[in-house]
Image (cartoon, rainbow, N blue to C red; front, side, top):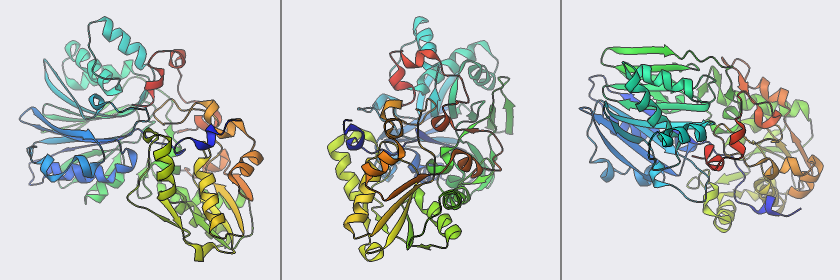
Length: 482
């Protein structure tokens, strides 16, 4: 088997985006700085582009570009933005070999009823059909962005309805797949969560101002109060008259992505009633219960493996230790950098504390193995530092199926667990033992979740229909990547 699986760029998964919005309710707050700070809190969800759009006197003003928040949303760049009535923010990840500047969000569209500033997270699985239909109607697109298609749909439905809220609800009837949206419309801030609830979205307050965010951590980092999650199929609207809620007539089985709890979300977030930190600690405890072992120390791979390692330590009595130091200036690196650059970043991202692991039997906890190159590097680092034994434990099941709902999960034939047995993977990464958390165990980590759970990437049983055209259409490689 070609070592392509092992040598490709980073095999960590990537979420698509983080979205945020704030409606200023006659308060003396700087919504531009506040939105930038919120995007810092959501930076883990996307590091390829960042942007803020302010709505002021029904006009929109934007700063957005390729890059992380710190490089794009500088003090100098934000000087041009007024302190308007509302702001919409976005951070994006995408994994194509090139980045479309035209797809950088918030996407601003102007039509007969004013302007829409739209920030999107997820993947519309019938994107190709909708786009083709709109193109046949005369629409001209500037990008392959899901957001642009959604914006066109809303604009089209607005002509047929009395309000923007009705237009959004009508648009939801046409969309399939996963999406959460924050929309800045003239005099209204709108939050939307798809009827399945695949992507997280929540509501918070700062004084009397209302915030809508992908995660509660961003709200609380601003000194705000987390109020509740946006419900699956719910459209929330904030305007001068207050807060309003509408429910889409389209009923679907609810199912948030399980990997939010494993990796994507920040540990200080609460998603649909479940603390991410608690969920990961439970995963560590269950890992030990399912696969007990004797060792000198247990360590986690920063950052999402740390909580699980602490849970493993609590269950096993094995001493918890910090074995890895992470370069905090290298984040969740994407595949766009190319093999040579990504390999270099992989080597500089982590360093081992040799005095901690030398001559020790080490249990190392990570959140997943996708292609295998990261696991191979981690084991190699521990070996070179003098570890006597290395037992790798993974706080999720084996990845066997791709995702079509907004996660950058490779094709089925690129997933290492589809190519090799567990024992073959163990030998390839160089560990003395390798075990994964069972799917039943992973589901237990999210007990108390107020909606259903999607485990399609582990089980192959998706919680929504996958259009056949997703496999063959000219846009198929774009649908879950922008």
